[in-house]
Image (cartoon, rainbow, N blue to C red; front, side, top):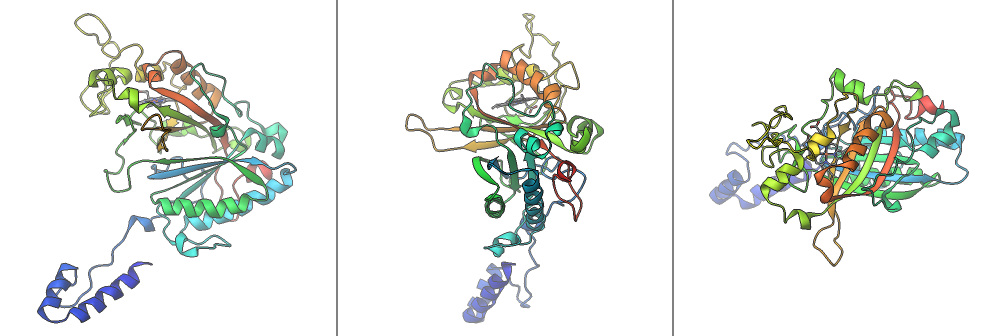
Length: 398
Ligand code: HEM
């Protein structure tokens, strides 16, 4: 790939420098006195995530550093037959790009050669499924109920088709998006895009819980991919959606200006965890189990009744979700210096049974609501994966 011209450059430079000065310079740039080249460098850019499988990639996949979300409206006249054309085209290009190969009609094939754990995950909104097969629309597919805390903007909400494109390199994400958006042009119009980020690949240990822009460890109490617990909570067992799931995407503004005014104990009380370690206020380490019965000397609960963690936890073990969130940071309006927040995404087999009761509890009471405001909301069915020769959506469209 791109290390070839570089090596050539080093050799030429070594020759040009010559003599002792040349050897010193050569050593400084990594060529030993015997003239041997340094070992071949491998980069995370070469890493791939398999596209094929019973589930789509990009859900149980350890979260990449960058994720962009693209929601489309289907054009008038796009029917089941059109969708049967669209999805194999998208699948074919997604297969190629995630393998580090150019898309079929790739205008910049060089950009495809760094997959950087690229995943492309497709979701279907209510209208997509209705046009494919009106009988097949899951009961939970569609806008969430209204919550009192919502200040939703149509510019970040709903949609018929979703592409979640994630990789450890933002150029890879951008290129994949361009190729796939070209594929959709005669079938759908772009409704909204959201671009999210986490820490860059390699800057924190693998599997470290991410920090959101409030500085909190976010994702500690989450089902673990690969466990039967995760499988039961996330993968659907219902008809064409078997081995698929659902995604809820909430764009949540986080008011960093007023958060700045909160002291450390106040911040910790709002969630029920220590800001630095992420441990529950009754524990020491991040993954310690919280003790919700523990009280202070005055008899008050150490983890307050209004703490986000307490409100987000249900006695019903089925009311759980898998969170895979990203930060966003947009241009602020002139009145402030921040326009940041969270692209909250969660995966669950059944939105109504798992997500809605949890969101309702948080809408009813959660101290974090003081600094957070949902401004976008969308729900999509995530069809199962496919094998080579198949296409995403085949269980609905074939
Ligand atoms: C900007 C908005 C939000 C922020 C800043 C935020 C932050 C956090 C933090 C810091 C934790 C504790 C660490 C952890 O377990 O991850 C947490 C836990 C959690 N949050 Fe959120 N959250 C937000 C929105 C939401 C929403 C919208 C939901 C679901 C409707 C949600 C569901 C949960 C759940 C289920 C937990 C784990 C609770 C447990 O300990 O069992 N959060 N959140």
